Length: 210
Length: 370
Image: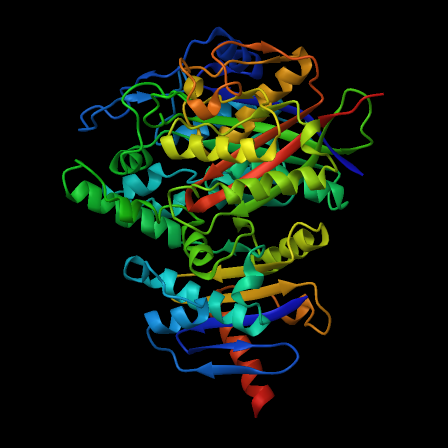
């Protein structure tokens, strides 16, 4: 069941709690204080975070806030992530830099973003998530992430999971928990892009508050 | 319903097949050698665990060349609807390298292309998913397959794991000063880094009753250190939690574990972290081995190599030596050994993998008895 949703796209950002409550705001750059507030502490490595990593971390932090999972409760929570592009783009950045400098030596701070799980790992460090960190690539990304998160909960492997769908400038993160009074998965209908899903969730939020 | 590890096969620097891997490890000879893959590049070392006689076709990635060789005997033998879990860290990363050099091929690096290639090779048309969890990818994929089978979502699942040698990854590890200038020496007191390798493997996980002799994937757990992007938690809490979680799921106490197929990369921090987790988990030393001094660190495929060796150990009652190990570090004494060891009980084994981002997966495999 969905315990909370956070999103960030060109149209804005916000969080939504299934049983009521939420906030939305305009789209601005993600600041260090905003992330630190959501993380419950300073983001030590904020300057090295790429723009997509900041957007994804913002959505994840908002989902954790929506779910009400405080820092102490996150130790066993994991993160499943999906989405094309970010790691390939980061790999290209790393290799371009390495090639442009005569193939003598690469930059480690760029290399660490060449994995599909790199951004999720940064989120885990910042938000204190000690559960599994996995990237799953499949068709119908968000539904697949939600289904697998649900199965991990059912197997008793984790008490909660974040399902994060992120692209270059948009991210949607759904906190999946086992509590009662939460939204069923089909309330997040299949979309073709995280920005589309974020817009739909934002519109649902607007309808609720109007 | 139990998740049974029905069959597996691997292609590594030791050559084709699990027998080649086992014999290579038992010989205590490393398959790591000088590679000409990065000729002309200013790396200070040229060692790698390259798959021998691998000849990619024109514009073909090394991963595809490995999979073509590995999977040929399996083609047409599986039900078409068998779900596929593909485990890889960077897949066909060569396409990104070529894109930087001017070819319009970057989109080919997307995992969906590699999934399609595997499905075509094996004539599969079921669901395909790529599972990536850094160097714990293949154990994480096997765990995902076991979960699917246990929950009745699939009758059988095929896991295919692969990562090839590439300049991008090689240069990255070199930039982090993570590579040794000699073949890796896991758990050795003089270890000073890892050696990269390449490999591919597959495992078929099926629903079963656990008949005598069958190998059950009886427990698993994945965790994240949430401490550092590249270095493991020096207190080993993440791996410790994964080991405890896997034993709990397997309904087994630490005493049940007969031996351990460790990650054992040969880096100072990883091996120390693992030994700390093992010594905190088990009251007395267990036989531990690592494959990486023989094959190199094969990234996403590493876990399947561990499982392949582990199955031989269970069958033969012998734990292989850790190739490259000459003088075990203090914390590894009585755990990792230079020579192979006969064991009197080989019913339950633990496999562990860890990787960038602080990921850890531990898995318990148990042989059913009558």
